[in-house]
Length: 97
Image (cartoon, rainbow, N blue to C red; front, side, top):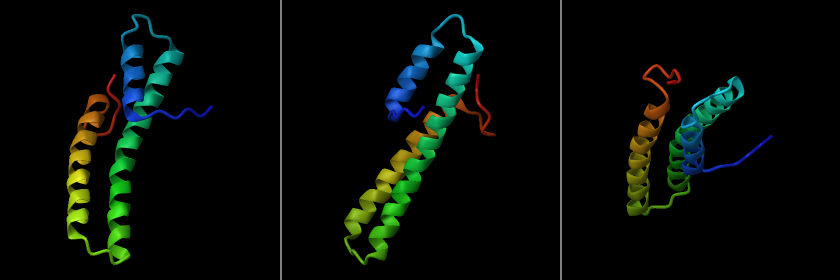
């Protein structure tokens, strides 16, 4: 089964599931999957900005303001991604329970 969610939707679902008093093994497994998908998505977003910056530079587009704006967005996304990952994973990359 494939389901597409944005980060906000995935985190909202995870928060709702986290509030449940009784958690079955299946629910715990689903929550773990959602956490790893969130982690992956946060990492991919920054990589996509890098690819876009490289593509702009490779194509000879010389609008330094545009590239600077993308670098600023990448920095902000990196900070936000780090905060999101820190909610669900420790420094070693292990899932927080």
